[in-house]
Amino acid sequence: MRISREGCRDMLIKNTTPVDDGFYMPAEFAPHLGTFLIWPVRPGSWTNGGREVQPVFVRLIEEIAAVEELYLLVDETHRVQAEAMLSHLPQEHIHYLAIPTDDAWARDMGPTYVVDDKGSRCGVNWRFNAWGGAVDGLYPDFARDDAAAPLMADALGDECYDASDFVLEGGSIHVDGEGTAVVTEACLLSAGRNPQLSKAQIEQKLKDYLGVTKVIWLPRGIYNDETNEHVDNVFAFIRPGEVVLAWTDDEKDPQYALSQEDFAVLERETDAKGRKFVVHKLPIPAQPVCITAEEAASFAFVDGEDMREPGERLAASYVNFYICNGKVIVPQFGDAMDAEALRILGECFPARKVVGLPARAVIVGGGNFHCLTQQIPAV
Image 1 (spheres, helix red, strand yellow):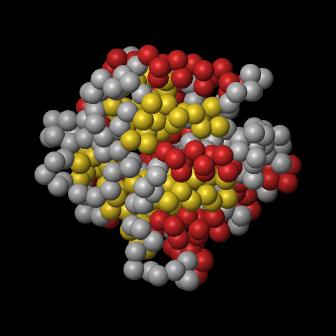
Image 2 (cartoon, helix red, strand yellow):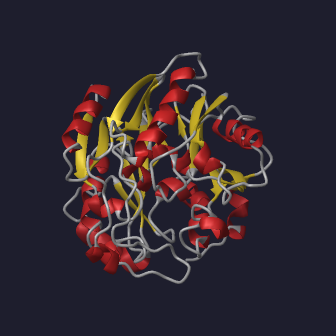
């Protein structure tokens, strides 16, 4: 099945925006119906065509499907493989969707969900251009990713608002569900996103489609983040008025200056309700996570695709955790800071189980658990 964006037009709400209709994006820590995931197979993203990362996906699915519905996009070629690897799990909460995609980053190309106070839920369908299109996109053919969001929403019986004139990825926004959105200037003002729009126009678009009243612009994200520094790798809400920020005290680390800039903004800002932020500093790994020669040799790139090089520093961050019903799923890198990250997040989320999962096989693809997941709010 190959459905173009043009073929999805009849699924889109075109004449109004979410804010016109009383919709807003709820926080990730609000109750979920479920989560979208996409089975990882792209040879240019995953070592050995996904052989190392797929067992991690199985563990991720085990954790999520135990507490909410799990919607897994998988092409027909790999469905038998996915079903076999998941056959030991109860299947009543795992739903297989034959929706084609180009890669596995459900956060960035899936629908962003908004809700209203009457119990309705809709998606938002942004334009996806592989994190920069012709300017600095990571792979050249992203048509299936770009067309997937309304198909994903339709599989759940949900409509989608049409924001397809605006390039945005789900990992580039965080909201508190009470009127505040946080983004990074490095990403949203990058030349490959919406260069025809001013910062004020971009901010208005976020207000119209996320139902927020205030947008806070952090200057930077995680050092060497190939997404032009998505906010979800450096910052997250844990509840309204309370956040975590990726941090290092090592002045020689390039991340030191970036986090200092972001912290200065959070110190002087207030949220949409006028609250000062409580900021919890979450360390980055003590040792940079870098591509090995063996890993670099195990990718198979197509022409025009961003290539991995031995020694390349990856944007490893514990902030790229995923909040699902009753749990927080946290990347672990085999680093001295793994346990400290779990300890801090355990204190931040006393009512949730904090689960650490091995993430080396995920970060080599360029993101982590938050990037792979897209929450579907309960209504």
